[in-house]
Length: 164
Image 1 (tube, helix red, strand yellow):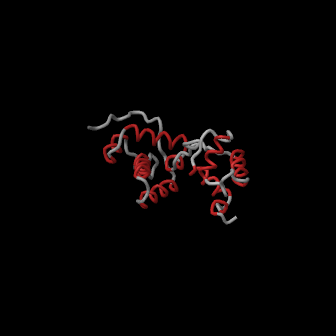
Image 2: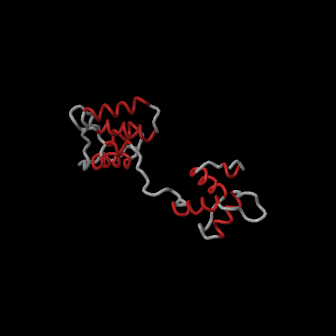
Image 3: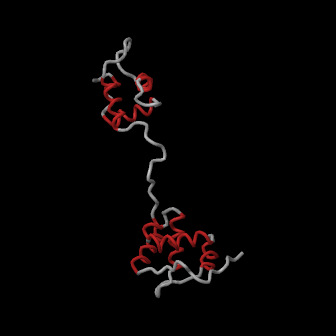
């Protein structure tokens, strides 16, 4: 089923020679994600400059087996944000999961790990630290794996091997 032709293009793609060459390199590598390769092909086909192919949206959709919205989004993003924005990935503003330990809570954990262990224990274990940080209200919850990663990142884990 052929897509409807859009009579007036709101986002006209006009690439310079350097941009066309960069897109050809992206396609030539072939080892990039399929979505990025598709976007590069769309931009080359949609290029309305003198050296470009200047295909209509319908021709691009049919030739590349894609959707109207994909072609529209690529055109729009290229015109509004530039080539790097289309080919790159958008960076997240926040991590997918908020970190449990920040600088202050990390410092308190380290101080606890360096302190004298509870009665009946020769040294701190990750499980003991897990229970104690929650008991002291340093964090609401934490696993022994998380505590181990924080301590490993901060200094070597020699205190847990009994070497220090």
